[in-house]
Amino acid sequence: MKTAKNIFVGLMVCAMVFASAEVQAQNNKKNTAKAKTTATTSKKTKKTSTPEPPRVVTLPSNSNDCLFAIPLEMDKPYGPTTAPDGAGRIQEVVADKAHPDIFEREHNSVWYKFTVPYNGELEISIAQLSEWDDYDFLVYRNTGSYFSNQVMLNKVTPVAVNLAGIDSAAMFNAVMKGGRNDGKAKADPKRKSTPTQNGNRKAQADNKPAFELTPEAKPTIGMFHDATDRMLTKSQNGKFIKSIPVRKGEEYYIVLDNCTTNGQGHIITVSVHVDAYEPLVLFYDRKGRKYVDVDLMILERSGKDTERPIVRDEHYRGGKVKFVPDFGYLLYAKRDGFFSIYREFNSRDLMMRDTVMVFEMERTERGSTFQIKNLDFEAGEATLIGNYDSVLMDYLMMFRNHPDVNFLVKSYVQSYGVDIEADMLLSLERAKSIKTWFVKNGIDAKRITTAGMSKNEIKRAAAAALNEKGGGFSMVKAELIITGKDVQ
Image (tube, rainbow, N blue to C red; front, side, top):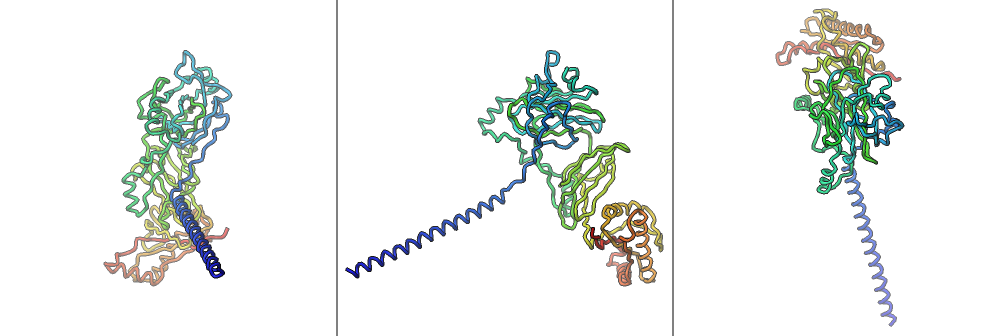
């Protein structure tokens, strides 16, 4: 009996051990599976991560009154905004029998104003964030003093009217068929703004990566030059009205009203349609072989003292910019670790160019070299001749904007090796002439060193010129080489 009892106890112990081992194995499998699931989920999350949505602009509390209209910049989207809330302290727009084609009253309104920069046709793009909202708008031309009072007394007639209501029945049918969306306007994924074929070919030829513009919000109502309706009343269901002609210096007001209670915001863009040149403007890091974002400002000049910023972006990645005929422009771009770019040009100079403007960003690191080819000297002398001012001006602006960067001027001569010593001296004297030009135009002489060709360089140049396979003389007349940066 004792033996049987001992055998029975032993079997029970073994069973408990095996059971414990099996439970532990199962737990390990669960933990492993959980870890794999977590890792997979993490990977999926990483892959499907989407860029942050644009920041919402909070409408000022008093912007629903004409006196506190929000100023708009031409061609620059304003929004997405918060929802307009109420009619403000003053109900400026109220319909009557004599003026039936305006708002019956302001429901949830916001006022905007802008000044026309040049003659053309006014365009207004409004992308509402919810398709269920019912936005209307009126456009007034500023008539001068006490303008808001004149609007309130219906003594000013709007120059453009869009009161078209939403087609609720059609929207309901669409929802029943396809399911209601989240109520927010989304860009069409199939609609992409890309450079033209000429621009793509140019980028490929220069071995630059292709660049695509980000999709933009599609307008839901507005005013465009190719629309047909002059006005949309409350009984109509259209979306867009035809542009009106505007002239430089005129000031206009837009009152945008949402008839829907508890609605959502919008994005509004105002522009003037003209036959303009709209290239894709990009900035390219030649050494890194990639497009980079820059702190960019472009000013439009319509006179000696009249300047208007058309681009002002601290993180400009790339986009289309509208240049209007017969206007001057000033472009200034900067980025840490790179030379700033400063350009002055006239739109007439751009009309014959490609549809893509690529500005190459040059690094300020030691050893960076800039070759100068279109530079001429008197034969056998060190005197600069020709249009050397325009050739050197871009480099002058580069170094003037970066006073901490020092550089070497090295000059080259075309030599057959007949008098090597004389050629060495001539190349050095030409480098000194270039330095003198820089110093004369405001660059500190301490920042510039000079060098000519060495004896071996002249021998190699002469041998290449005498050898047909060598390709003849080099076209490089001088080089500017970064030697270092002063610690600020």
